Image (cartoon, rainbow, N blue to C red):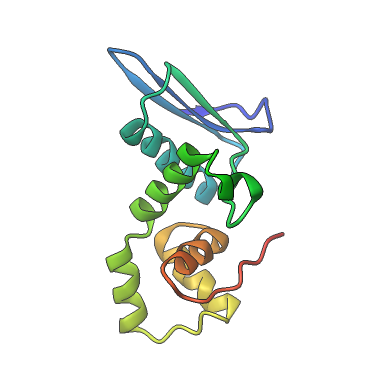
Length: 140
């Protein structure tokens, strides 16, 4: 469900009860962001027992924030990892990187690979870093 972008802070939500599940995303976000948000909310649905409504307000993928290192944001980190694996499966990424020589320091080549998976270059860089590849995460 695409929801109006009335609240700029809301990326998506998950509503569930005994009879139905609804995932909503902010329609004003970029397509790659909406895809990641949907995958993230699916992570919450699959992995976490929460109340009826879960709202993600501008969730951010954090590499090493104070909150992340304390483990107090565990559900969000876990939902992000679920989304990353769903959208960028480890076996597919490794096969792509073996099959074709990518210069991962080259932004244009990183963009090509990100487009292949329908994700942002930042999400791809974070995923590759998590898999042991050395990629500079560029923001902004």
